[in-house]
Image (cartoon, rainbow, N blue to C red; front, side, top):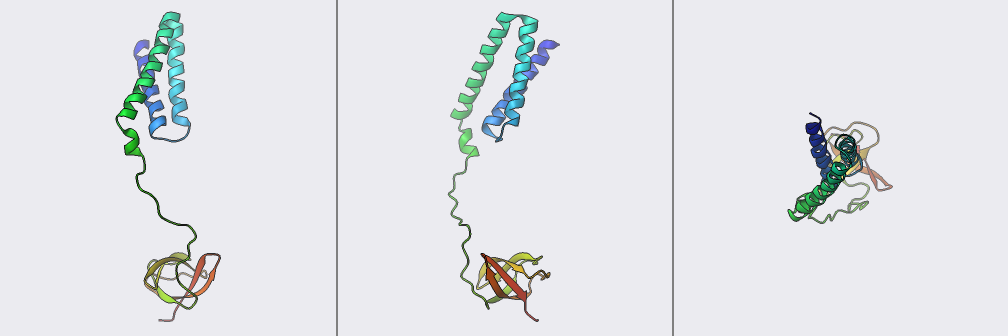
Amino acid sequence: MMTSILIILIVLGLALILLELFVTPGFITGALGGAAWLYALYNIYNIYGTNSGHLALLGLLLLLIGSILVAVKSGIWNRASLKENIDGKVNLMPDVKVGDSGYTQSTLRPMGEVIINHKNIEATSMGELIESGAFVEIIKIENNKIYVKQLSS
């Protein structure tokens, strides 16, 4: 019974450590996997003796190294990595000016999307709710923020 629990702890620990290395960032899953291995090793040393404990420790290290080598050679990094360059830029103002008009693509509560000069732009109302499809005009551009008001229909 205890042997099967130790085997389950070793397999669970390996799975958690590999999950930490290849999938989840952070520290928690690897720490849980390491704790499972340490608990299993502690019990192996206490129940089966020093020689068995040393062999189990060597086996766990070889198992971990072998699993990492197999995972790296299988190309798991390629499946998890980003292959595209991101061309987006932050804080670029679209080519619009105060007085330009357009219509809302989404409801402004107070922020939302508007179409002005055939460009999709994030805009802010002056606090009021503006329904989708309403005609709006730019009344102020301040700190990379575009403020609009609804035009009378």
